[in-house]
Image 1 (cartoon, one colour):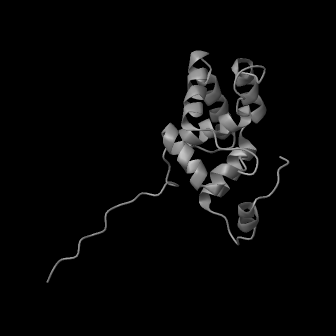
Image 2: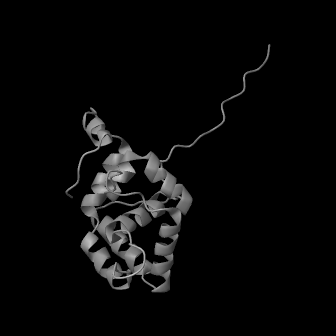
Image 3: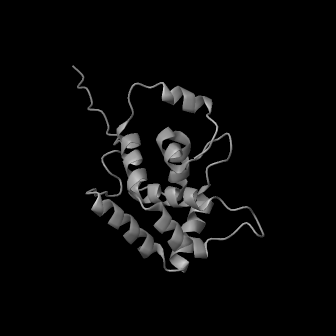
Length: 156
């Protein structure tokens, strides 16, 4: 992917270690058969011939998968991509060149998959890639932080 480095890219390149989420996403990026997913969805995906410009298909596929893997709502996924450098890197979005697809765009993408009855084929393609690599993911995995109330102190 040919893109310019932002200050955030430079800052993150200086880190001594990466987080678990970032490591997982790097593995998934190498495992998933992106060309097969593209071939499944491309015939139904709108082109830029007329109307509003559409987001790149690879960005939408990646955002859709992140939403499924981490159990976010559409609005939650949009916010998570803004908050997480690992998510932006996985999606290939640089704020220097484009904005993150909004929650409505993600919802329209999900509806497109359902309308053309290809959501199952997309999930099967991803599951097959993961199974062959010996990986199993469940939505809302351990990589998501859980906030619990602190224990109350007893007054003496």
